[in-house]
Length: 375
Image 1 (cartoon, helix red, strand yellow):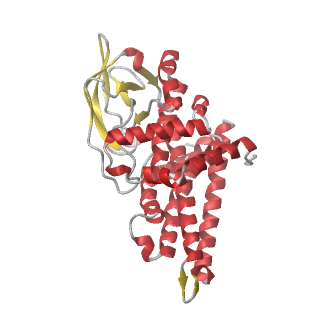
Image 2: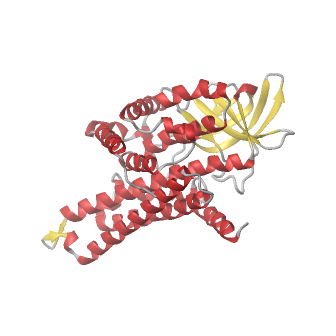
Image 3: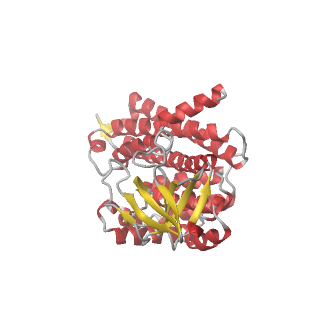
């Protein structure tokens, strides 16, 4: 395994960092209270800017992770957590879905606009909960003269209010397997609900959607089997793992800066052994999480047969480490950390989403155990 970054990858990281000036940070602050048209405009702008800086947009086509991709994702997740989720859902999950399983016409019609940042995507996978393992797909497409009529609902869809395309997971009446119905935002019978007010990742546009006799042409249907559906779920877990790394870096850096600059008893608090030990434990946990995430990415890129169980392992460890590191960082910041509006308290709240979204940490452990036992 080679986790070294080449010169080209380092240059991309540098260009992406340069995008996040004070003005840029101000633009991304308060996204949760902006009108959806403003959120859409800002997200589109950043998709284009990131692509021009070399952020890996076109890597959607091979459908695999790589160490250099995770390094880039980690940096963006640390700089702008909410933007990161919107970008990655559009590119890495929706984009990969079309690139890996779509027809040539679907690829040609969707991917160019998506990769350039001119169009955005969303994936409506789980139903009213956040899992597909214990909550079967009830959204159903029925054959009609012009394609399918789809009915159902989805509870938590990232990018739903701002996406140009939404891939809706469901089943086809009277047929085996599953399908993703590709729907444009103005599709008849598609209703997008009010933006949800969430505990964490407040800047991410998340809404429920409802489908009532929605018309979907046969050319806009991606047919799937259960294994392919789990592949899409794994892509979601990979994005959430990278998001965890970003949260850890963000919280650790904030705690370290505070420990160096804040004084107690006439000296910086980093001089106190208990604070130094806490920082040491945080860094050890962060470095371990990075190594596991990088190994999981390397196994995905090399198509190792153990790649799926490593992806689950990385999701569990990184998600729970993000909460632990953010909690310890909040302890170091003290009263300052308890006041809303700083990266540490936001990271603490964000970490809970990562634990329950995608394959939850509980279900991930079950899958890891099943694999170990050979089920």
